[in-house]
Image (cartoon, rainbow, N blue to C red; front, side, top):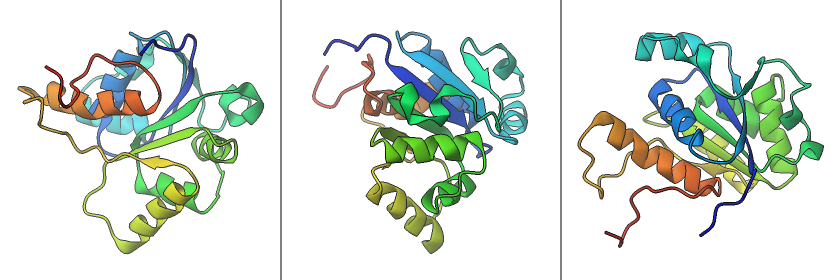
Length: 188
């Protein structure tokens, strides 16, 4: 399937554990022709630095926006962004989206994706889920969003942590409509 040129993707990184997922997603998005814009939540950089032991988020090759910068193009449906990927997505972010609270750029962008009937992909990393979290994820799904738990698959027999992470990230890229070279069931 040919990859659509200049697909517009917004990436939001929340403060949930799982910064490695965001790091790999950013790396693989560099290999696409997508136009990518990025926003970090207040705690996302702290978690990234703690979990990954680096500040590579300071050298992201994409346009970045402040967490409260509502002038970011993906804060409006008229900008025509195709997808918002929240990776990793905290349960606090899920709760705000599910209840329509648009108090920062991430929750506003999610609200925009849902109202415009565009792709909202929430890569949740929490486990286990409580009933409130399940209901919030159900609300987002019923509104048209996609809940994509950061649950690696093992069909491809990943031999490293990065390869296991990539099973999730390749799936996220597919959900966003970007062609990937990742493992596909039934293909060798």
